[in-house]
Picture (cartoon, helix red, strand yellow):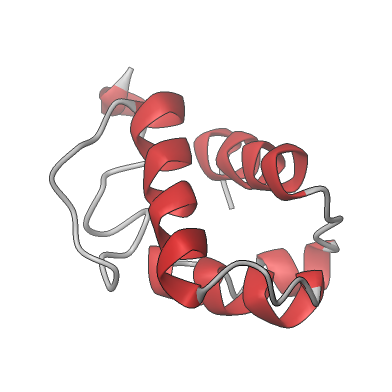
Length: 87
């Protein structure tokens, strides 16, 4: 996992008030997986899955400046994070 993805996961931690251990972070490779993970960890049933997914999308857009992606796009393969030519 490269620096771009680590920074993105840290932004999710901050936004949702959760800690994402390294062993879990390695599996959070798409917006959908992040949404499902946050749903399982927050225990906050005041937010729907759709609301969490929307916040995940907003964090991605703000953190990496990518606006055109699907819930199943891989951060590295589809969004080109962690590639040296990206910067």
